[in-house]
Length: 179
Image (tube, rainbow, N blue to C red; front, top):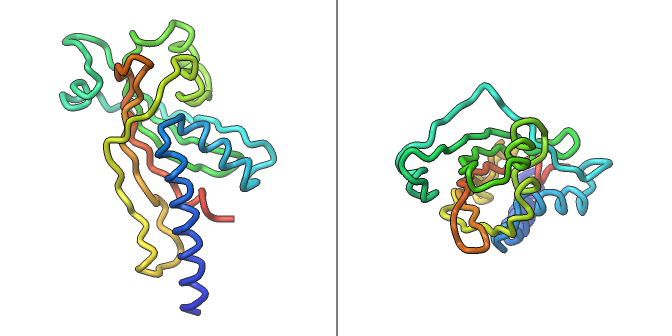
C-alpha cells in the first residue's frame, strides 16, 4: 500500500512541477489554468470562471500599496475569487488592484461578471513577476489525501512599461491534480 501511495505522490509531484513551470513563464494564470483544464479534460468545457466571494474585504495595507506603487490617497480595490473549471475549484485568489490603471469597461466587468481578472485585463499585455512561492505539498511525507492547498504564489502583474497594477496571492488546490 505504501508503494502505491509513493507512486501516486511522485506522479502528483511531477504534475505539480509541470503546472508550476507553466505558471513561472510569466503569463496569465487564467490562461495556464484554462489550458491545464483542457489538456486534462477536467470539464466538458475548459472555461475558467471566477466565483467572486463578496463577503471578504481586505483593505490594502502599506506593504500592498508600496508593491503596487500606489500614490497616497489612490484607490486600491480588492477582489477575492475561486477560479473554477467545471465543478473543480483550481485556485483561490486574493487580488488587490489599482482601478485607475484599468479602463472603465474593465472595472465594470470585474464588478459585474464572473470573468477572471487575467481575462479582463488581457489587452494590457501584462506579465507576472513572482514575488514568492510557498510549497504546501511535500511528496516525501506520503500522506493521503493530498492537502487542499498544494502551493501558494504571490505575484505582481505589471503592464508593458513595467508598472505594477495588481498584486495576487493565488492558492492552487488539489483539484489541479486529482482525477
